Every structure is written in C-alpha cells, then in structure tokens.
Image 1 (cartoon, rainbow, N blue to C red):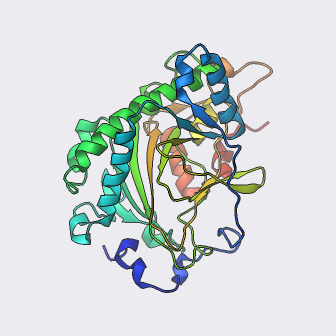
Image 2 (cartoon, helix red, strand yellow):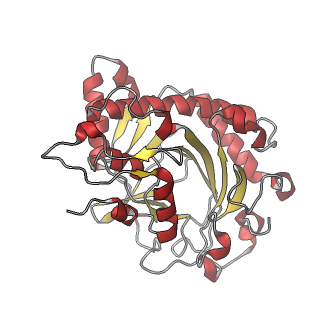
Length: 341
C-alpha cells in the first residue's frame, strides 16, 4: 500500500527520479493546444431520419481520427455523475479502507495498484493509481469489487450494464458504416469487459512525468469518461492536441483489434494522459476486449482483389503476448501481424 501515489505524493516537493521520463517522451513545458475541431457526435441523430448522416459521421471520425466524443448517448446524466463521484470517494478513502482490494498480483480480477501491472520491473513509473476489475457478466465478478464506499457496487453495477448497452450500440453503427453484417462484433470479441478508474494526484513536476505514456489501446474499443480536469492528449498529424472534457460525454477510442478487423480502414490513435501540479484528476475507462481464444482477422466482406488483407489471422492472446513482450504499445505492436507484400 505504501507504493500508492495517494499514500505519499502530497508530501514530496520534488519528483522522484524513477518518475522522470526521457526528454523525447515526456510532455515537456510547451503548451499543447486544445483542438476545437475534434469530432463530437450527437447520438440522438442515429434515431432520426438523419441516421445515415450520423453513421457516416461516426465512420469518418473512426477513419480520420480513430476516436470521437459522444453526447446525448442515452445514459442518464445522474448515473454518469454518480459513478464519477463514487470512484472519487473510493480514491479519497484512507488506505486501510482500500487495503482489501490492493494487490500486486496481476492475475486478480479486481485490484488496486499503482503505475502498471509490472511495477517491480519498470524503469520509470507512471504518475497514477488504478482500480481495475472485470464486469461482464456482472454476477460473475461483483462479489470481488470494493465493498467501500458502501454504494460502490450498486452504482458501478448499474453503470456497467448501461455501458455494455452503449458499446453494443456504437459497435453496431460502426458495423453498418463498414458494411459488415448485423452483429458482426459478436460475443467473442466483446465479452471481456473491464472497468478501470485512473487517479492522477497533483504532481510536483508535470513537465517531467506522465500519467500514461503515448500508446494505442490493445482492445477493440474504449469508452473514456473524463472529469472536469483536462489531461487527455491525442497524437495527430505529427503533433499533440488536447481533448477538452465535455460534461457527461464519452470519448470513444478505437483499439488495435478494430484496426485489424477493418483491414486498416479504421485507425487506432496514439494518446496519453498528462499530469498537473494543482488538481486531482480522475478518469473512468470502460474497455471492450475479445476473449483470449477469439480469432481476430480482417472481415472477409472487406477483402477483394483490389483490397487484399493487410493483417493475418491470430488469436487475441497471441497479440497480447506480443504486445507485452515487445513493450511496443503503439503502431509497432501490429508489425508482426501484417502480411508482408
């Protein structure tokens, strides 16, 4: 427990050396502009006569950016706000109340830890604490979730059910845009669903540290809920741009598996989380992942003589093994799965 940032970060005046990133990967002192042209999709338009326009907007966002923010998504604002509150309450609790879920065993289905799953072998630590647990099917995992705050399981349980519905809805729209069959993203590639909450305490030297380094997501798709504190940046066209938090909106981020299944039509964007010196920042990630034995390959309907497969077929567990062994969490993670011309 003494490794948790929340245990000691408020007592230090300078950043420990093992949290200082190399010059070429840290956020630095340069101001990254907030980008006002990043796509924001009003999901109510998918229920109207403008549905085809909305489907096209989402497809173009997935092709050009690899992510978008979604508003009017159908999840009650009070539930979204309450979930953020209860997560913040969890991180604000004394260590003795969090001890029951703290673990350095990465195989646990629910655990609180700091930095990454491999803390002991890291040269540089991330400036974050993380609570992560499986949440689908809920009845299989809810007994493992934190018992405190007392309402955590109830609130996060309701939130997880709604996020499962929203993810299915968004994936179906992407299927429609790509011309894939109804329900193409079936249970094999969407069953493993994870709830992950990041806590980024104030950092004494934000320009030297990172909450999360530049990376692409290894999964199929991510739904990110930000609080009001800015901290998400996306790498686009050779430069970093800031993603302004929109109250109760979700940032939808495509993962490597979506890029493979679309045969490269969709992109998995590089992004990172920066730190700041004054405010706690909290973000909540709902991650949709294939099952380990799921076969991932370009959708056959997208393959023809003029559009040959870019990637070979593989099981998701093979990808994860390569992802962790190479420790290349960006576009390089897909290199060995590409078909050589």
